[in-house]
Image 1: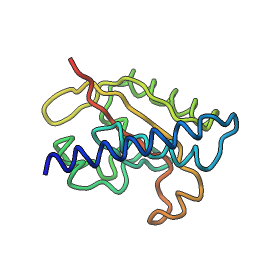
Image 2 (image 1 turned 60 degrees about the horizontal axis):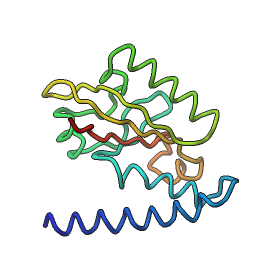
Image 3 (image 1 turned 45 degrees about the vertical axis):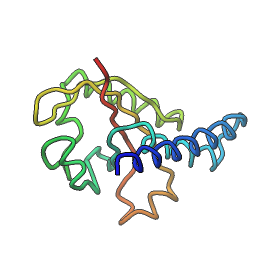
Image 4 (image 1 turned 90 degrees about the horizontal axis):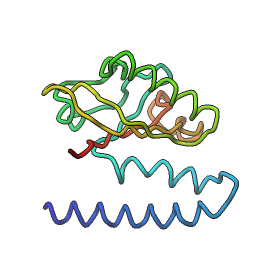
Length: 149
């Protein structure tokens, strides 16, 4: 089973890398580039999740509970961060809203076993993508990748 998961991850990464390479040749954002960017968290992050306009976890499930050690559905993401990290997160939000480009910052988040050093990837969902989701509640797609020692 582990080999199948690794093979599937490698295939997704290769497909995403190829799409990103093709899209990055363009100087103007395209729907293909946006689609490739939306795939990045699922390829490079340990866990992905959606956030609402007011930065609440939405659509979370058992895999999120397993990662954090508790349910995060409806929880503000800032509850998992220190006040200084929450300020840096909001600065990232302002940057991606202004540029309509994804961003990534290192953070320390709270999990059930203590604190975890992660890289947080955040991207703004396009309106068409939000409309296709249940109720259109998600506005951001995010991912966390644990940082190695």
